[in-house]
Length: 79
Image (cartoon, rainbow, N blue to C red):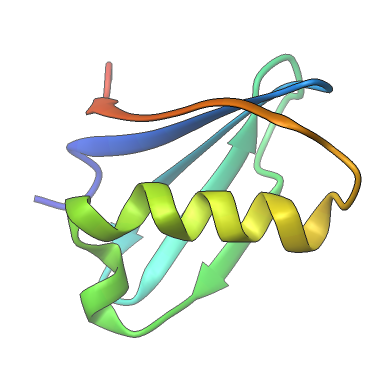
């Protein structure tokens, strides 16, 4: 079930995506940038679909201070 859903946060600077890749690990990517932006170890409950969007919003606010969030959504991942 890991990775079926992804959180998508569109900011004034770019689009960031987060999806679980295993128990307690979330992968973060940025559209237009090759590879992964970050891997974050979290409690396993935070990898649930309901927790992905709030997690990514908090991550973007903390990591990329000064960016404004335009939208934050959860969707099925296209593999």
